[in-house]
Length: 114
Image 1 (cartoon, rainbow, N blue to C red):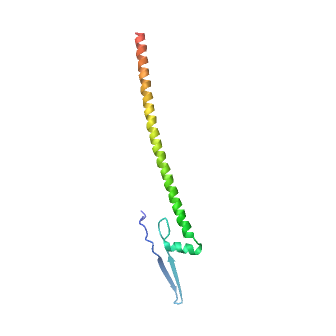
Image 2 (spheres, rainbow, N blue to C red; image 1 turned 180 degrees about the horizontal axis):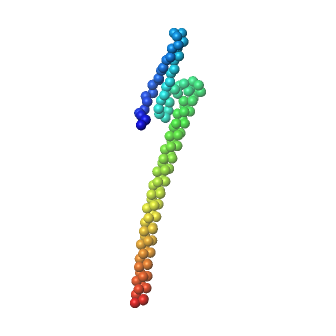
Image 3 (cartoon, one colour; image 1 turned 90 degrees about the vertical axis):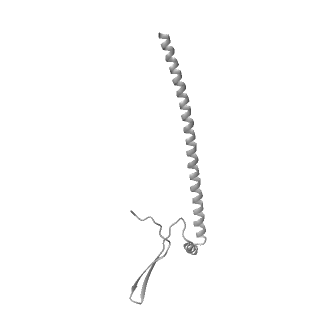
Protein backbone atom coordinates (compact mmCIF):
# COMPACT_ATOMS: atom_id res chain seq x y z
CA UNK A 1 0.00 0.00 0.00
CA UNK A 2 1.51 3.40 -0.90
CA UNK A 3 2.56 5.71 1.87
CA UNK A 4 0.07 8.60 2.15
CA UNK A 5 2.04 10.80 4.54
CA UNK A 6 2.69 14.34 3.43
CA UNK A 7 6.18 15.09 2.31
CA UNK A 8 7.62 18.19 3.96
CA UNK A 9 8.47 21.09 1.72
CA UNK A 10 12.25 20.84 1.69
CA UNK A 11 14.70 21.16 -1.18
CA UNK A 12 16.43 17.97 -2.25
CA UNK A 13 19.98 18.25 -3.50
CA UNK A 14 22.15 15.78 -5.29
CA UNK A 15 25.53 16.47 -6.71
CA UNK A 16 27.62 14.64 -9.21
CA UNK A 17 31.25 15.65 -9.66
CA UNK A 18 33.28 15.26 -12.80
CA UNK A 19 36.90 15.85 -12.08
CA UNK A 20 37.53 18.69 -9.71
CA UNK A 21 36.91 21.36 -12.32
CA UNK A 22 33.23 20.78 -13.14
CA UNK A 23 30.49 20.07 -10.64
CA UNK A 24 26.91 19.32 -11.48
CA UNK A 25 24.32 20.17 -8.85
CA UNK A 26 20.69 19.23 -9.20
CA UNK A 27 18.21 20.99 -6.94
CA UNK A 28 14.54 20.05 -6.76
CA UNK A 29 11.73 21.28 -4.58
CA UNK A 30 8.23 20.04 -4.02
CA UNK A 31 5.30 21.18 -1.94
CA UNK A 32 1.79 20.03 -1.21
CA UNK A 33 -1.24 22.17 -0.70
CA UNK A 34 -3.48 24.47 -2.65
CA UNK A 35 -0.96 27.32 -2.98
CA UNK A 36 2.77 27.36 -3.61
CA UNK A 37 5.04 28.61 -0.81
CA UNK A 38 5.77 32.36 -0.69
CA UNK A 39 9.30 32.02 -2.07
CA UNK A 40 7.97 30.34 -5.23
CA UNK A 41 5.29 33.03 -5.57
CA UNK A 42 8.09 35.61 -5.46
CA UNK A 43 9.79 33.82 -8.36
CA UNK A 44 6.51 33.91 -10.30
CA UNK A 45 6.32 37.67 -9.68
CA UNK A 46 9.87 38.05 -11.01
CA UNK A 47 8.84 36.32 -14.25
CA UNK A 48 5.40 37.92 -14.64
CA UNK A 49 4.44 40.93 -12.50
CA UNK A 50 1.43 40.45 -10.19
CA UNK A 51 1.24 36.74 -11.00
CA UNK A 52 1.19 35.83 -7.29
CA UNK A 53 -1.88 38.06 -6.83
CA UNK A 54 -3.53 36.42 -9.85
CA UNK A 55 -2.84 32.94 -8.44
CA UNK A 56 -4.23 33.85 -4.99
CA UNK A 57 -7.27 35.61 -6.49
CA UNK A 58 -8.01 32.52 -8.60
CA UNK A 59 -7.67 30.33 -5.50
CA UNK A 60 -10.12 32.54 -3.57
CA UNK A 61 -12.61 32.60 -6.48
CA UNK A 62 -12.44 28.79 -6.81
CA UNK A 63 -13.02 28.37 -3.07
CA UNK A 64 -16.08 30.64 -3.16
CA UNK A 65 -17.42 28.81 -6.23
CA UNK A 66 -16.98 25.41 -4.54
CA UNK A 67 -18.76 26.62 -1.39
CA UNK A 68 -21.69 27.97 -3.42
CA UNK A 69 -22.01 24.63 -5.24
CA UNK A 70 -21.97 22.76 -1.92
CA UNK A 71 -24.68 25.09 -0.58
CA UNK A 72 -26.80 24.44 -3.70
CA UNK A 73 -26.45 20.68 -3.30
CA UNK A 74 -27.40 20.83 0.39
CA UNK A 75 -30.44 23.02 -0.33
CA UNK A 76 -31.57 20.69 -3.12
CA UNK A 77 -31.21 17.68 -0.82
CA UNK A 78 -33.31 19.37 1.87
CA UNK A 79 -35.97 20.33 -0.66
CA UNK A 80 -36.10 16.80 -2.11
CA UNK A 81 -36.42 15.32 1.38
CA UNK A 82 -39.32 17.63 2.22
CA UNK A 83 -41.10 16.90 -1.08
CA UNK A 84 -40.64 13.17 -0.48
CA UNK A 85 -42.25 13.42 2.96
CA UNK A 86 -45.19 15.45 1.61
CA UNK A 87 -45.69 12.99 -1.26
CA UNK A 88 -45.63 10.03 1.14
CA UNK A 89 -48.27 11.68 3.35
CA UNK A 90 -50.55 12.41 0.37
CA UNK A 91 -50.13 8.88 -1.01
CA UNK A 92 -50.95 7.37 2.40
CA UNK A 93 -54.02 9.60 2.87
CA UNK A 94 -55.39 8.86 -0.60
CA UNK A 95 -54.70 5.15 -0.21
CA UNK A 96 -56.46 5.03 3.17
CA UNK A 97 -59.54 6.81 1.82
CA UNK A 98 -59.63 4.56 -1.26
CA UNK A 99 -59.48 1.47 0.95
CA UNK A 100 -62.36 2.81 3.07
CA UNK A 101 -64.48 3.46 -0.03
CA UNK A 102 -63.84 -0.01 -1.42
CA UNK A 103 -64.69 -1.67 1.90
CA UNK A 104 -67.98 0.28 2.17
CA UNK A 105 -68.93 -0.63 -1.41
CA UNK A 106 -68.21 -4.33 -0.80
CA UNK A 107 -70.35 -4.25 2.34
CA UNK A 108 -73.22 -2.60 0.38
CA UNK A 109 -72.97 -5.19 -2.42
CA UNK A 110 -72.94 -8.07 0.05
CA UNK A 111 -75.93 -6.56 1.94
CA UNK A 112 -77.83 -6.09 -1.34
CA UNK A 113 -77.20 -9.68 -2.48
CA UNK A 114 -78.28 -11.26 0.79
